[in-house]
Length: 371
Image 1 (cartoon, rainbow, N blue to C red):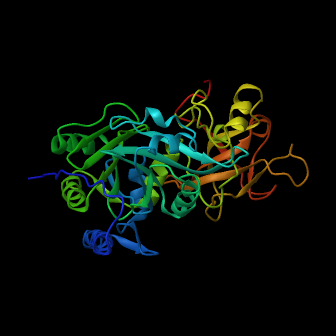
Image 2: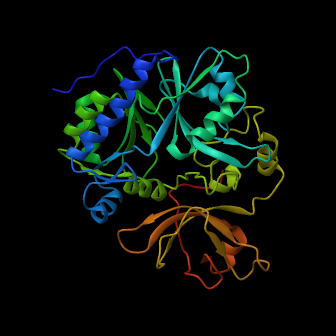
């Protein structure tokens, strides 16, 4: 029988013994996945033996994804909300145990340093973000703590992060947990298991859980769903039109350029935060000349985040945009999100990596950009 534990710890300072224990938890989770058929790349479970099939399943089918490539920053203390409010693009006052948020941090010029999801569990706000971006965000937040009642911690080893997709997966999760969030960005908590509904054409959920609960869920859900690695899950994000900022694209885009105003990641009424003046001015006084598109490209090699795009109407030597994220598509080529000059997208062919490179085939995003 599936069971969950209670009493989420709120301790901000871990003893050396606790640090060692939590490191062991991470290693034991990896060992658990290896026994379940995971194949490691760079020490992280990359897939479960058939990455091509996993990509096929990513397009709306039933999957359970290991997201060991994500990290967690825990923020605790009486000034947590005010600390976040002064640094993130969303309205941190609206985060609750029942509601999570997409959000980002910007530099003073309004360019995104990193993006993440804010999830509240008990007395702690967690930022869920790519592990490669964790130290950047953690160091940035530490600059603004000063004498505030707020403690920051890399909490990546405290909880296992997984992704769920598909109707049968959702039905089984509902049976196990007795509840699931019904609206995008909403959250439910059963014992120490947190489930957040994500945007997408199919049912999609993010799960944060202690290792023991994560193992129980994994065993039960893989009876109805196929296990996949982070690459297949990244494809579900691309299909949903949800960007991921990487080291290659940090400080490259305003929030509106990656459609953050359309997917709930930026508030224009919350007040000041780093970069807010530029973001607000762009929204109310300027005309956005670049925005994020979804596209397919057939190229010899995989596109990478930060790859430049070119179009005939661009000034000599000036690119038409940049790739945000890309993954192989099961029907051929590569599916990608890219920030492109709207004039180029409307009037020209857009090419990958050079003016003579492969042509991007623009596709429809699953949300409106009218707002």
